[in-house]
Length: 78
Image (cartoon, rainbow, N blue to C red; front, top):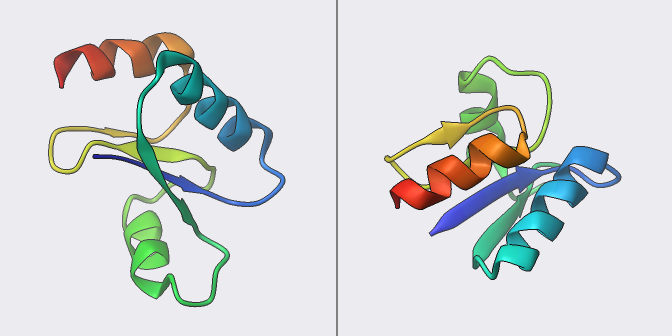
């Protein structure tokens, strides 16, 4: 399952989710700002990145900077 770690009002988060919707790819959105998402925030910090979204396919790959072409190439690998 594709997971999209996002924050509200993030243009790149919105663009990534819209792109996944256009491709018909199901995903789970994980809002990093929600209080109950401590584990998600710990994962985000462990990556050492300062931007969102983070898009992952479990243990297969992690995309830490949204780029349409890179995302599509990674999706082909699943």
